Length: 192
Image 1: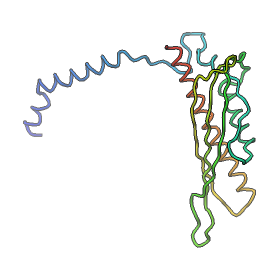
Image 2: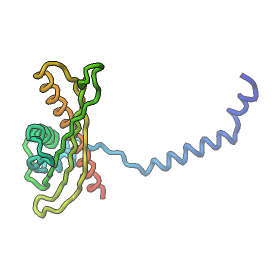
Image 3: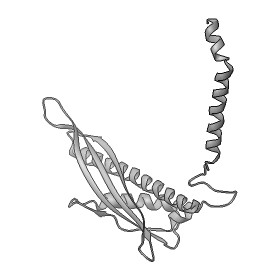
């Protein structure tokens, strides 16, 4: 290493600049409050977000298209119920959640010389509205989506089962996304 490169790394003005940048970054981050979203706030206490999530009544999932999405809607609802209540009983409802589900299926790849799809992708779109249970005043709205793919084969039952599994995977992702967004909303409201 040449002496000119070594001298630049020990330059006092460069050290001062780096120290100034690190100090400014430290001051900027000192105002940040990092808190667990679902975790406990103190020993033996429960997260306030968990009690808000457990107080959500989830209505039957509706569909925007003519395709029968009752099974997928039920999977989505069950995943949200388990996520909100952690397998326990819910609290008295203080909030109402309405979800509208839409589903699209697209061919992704085509087999050579056969002109037959090799795989499909399933996309689920969910629009949701969280409102107060008593007054029906809208608190927050949002959209969530998930895509899952599956391989297409020559066996009919295998194709049906693979499509169903893709629907279930996408529904689980949407349930987790909605839960995270609502937990973020409740945390933001508590911090005021």
